[in-house]
Image (cartoon, rainbow, N blue to C red; front, side, top):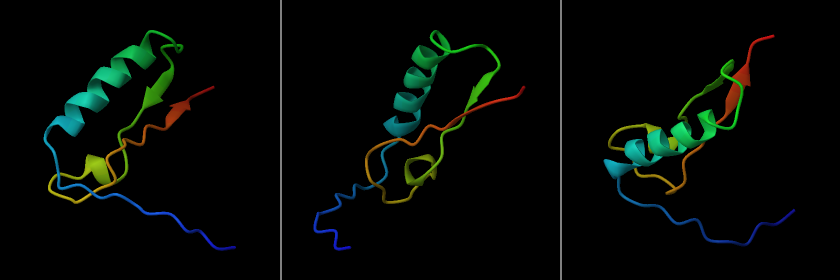
Length: 62
């Protein structure tokens, strides 16, 4: 398999954390309170060059 596409990287932006927190608040209005959200990936690491899209997996306990 060959993947022929560019990956855009951006210098770290302080606003990435704020964008994640806003999106998390929106998601919390949709999902059950037992669902937990985490900001992971390169945008979650302060100072790291990253693809400018936040990863936001969700987990739920039974």
